[in-house]
Image (tube, rainbow, N blue to C red; front, side):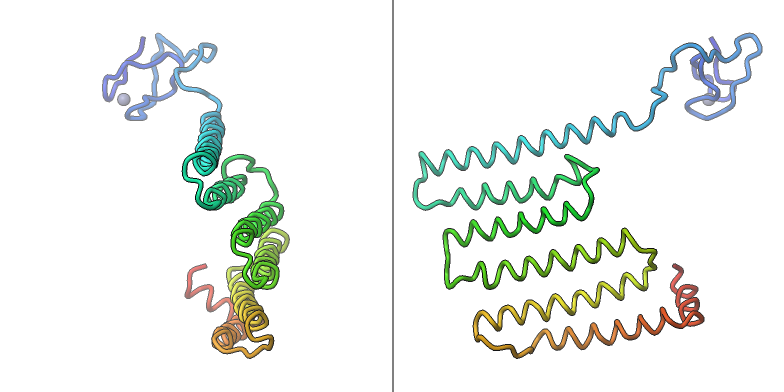
Length: 234
Ligand SMILES: [Zn+2]
C-alpha cells in the first residue's frame, strides 16, 4: 500500500497520481498495477446516458399521468365543459418539445422543428374545436404557424448545411423577423378587414431592412468585415 508523499492519503495501487493533490506516485517497492480494476470507472459518459433516459421516463410519466388524471376528473367529477382537453393538449405539446432534448436526441433538427409545428397546430386545433369562431383556425392560426415553422426550418437548414459567420446568421435572423412580422400582419388584416394595409409591421420591416443592408455591406467588404470582427472579438 502506498501513501501520498505530499498529503499522506492512502493510495490505490492502480493510481498514477494522488486523487487529492495530484502529486505523481513513485514507489519503487510497489509499482503501478495496470491489471487490477480501478476504483473509478474508465468509461466516460455512461452515467450521462442513464441520467438522460431516467429524465425521459420521469418527464413522460409526469406528463402522461397529468393528462390522464385531468381527463378522468373531467369525465367523472368536474363535468362542465371539456376543459381537460387544454391540459391534455399542453402535456402532448410539452412531450413533443422534449423529444429532441430528452427522449431521442439523434432526431434530425428539421424533423423535430416540423413535429413542433404540427404540435402547435394541434394545440390550436383543440382550442378551435371548443371555440370555432369565424374560422380563425384555418384562416389565422394555421398560416401563422406554417410561416413560423418554414422560417425556423430555413434558419436551421442555413446553420446546419452552410458554412456561415455570426454576421450572416444575424443578417438572416433580421430578414426572417421582418418576413414573420409582415406575414402576421397580412394574415390578421386579411382575416379581419379582407384587405392588406401594413402599419406596425412596416416599422419592424424598416428597422430590419436597415440592419440587413448594413450587415450585407459589412459581409461583402472584406476589410470592413475583418475590422468589425477584430473590434467585436469574434
Ligand atoms: Zn496527495
